Length: 222
Image (cartoon, rainbow, N blue to C red; front, top):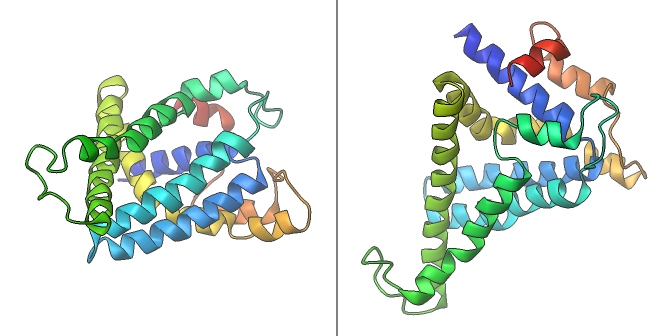
């Protein structure tokens, strides 16, 4: 169990240090994380609405941060090129994200072409029912996206890496709120780039780590 938790800490640390330099991106992740928590609560009573919030608010703000605000040049802090960071990304790197987002955006067309989706749904009677069917379809797209990448990791790396990544994805909203709740105020004060060694971030990460994670160990386990 300790090995699983250690691997989870490494994945979280790499995700933060490699892909969250921009305070605007961190702020959008804070918005995304709070939206995901709302979706988590709604998922028990209204899965379709939870999926709509998850995709339209939480995923959109999260990916806008990565695609438009996160620096893509050479990472001076970690001494890593963007190509290297994309190559070692455990989850969805930019190319994989674009494919997933294209599938998500195009999926409602299936309901336009066939409102029953091969008999899965009763034909929608109004726009509200159509939107609800879209939400249910997007729920499947999201879960399928997680399952597909986990299966890839099982094959390309090992089962633990895949399970750790799924655990990280499920718990990211809680962790992101802890890490990035100060970012919106920092953006309002005029800052745009996070200090990699900031006291607040170091304290938040230290709460998860028994001891610091060396860069060499982190790279070898991605």
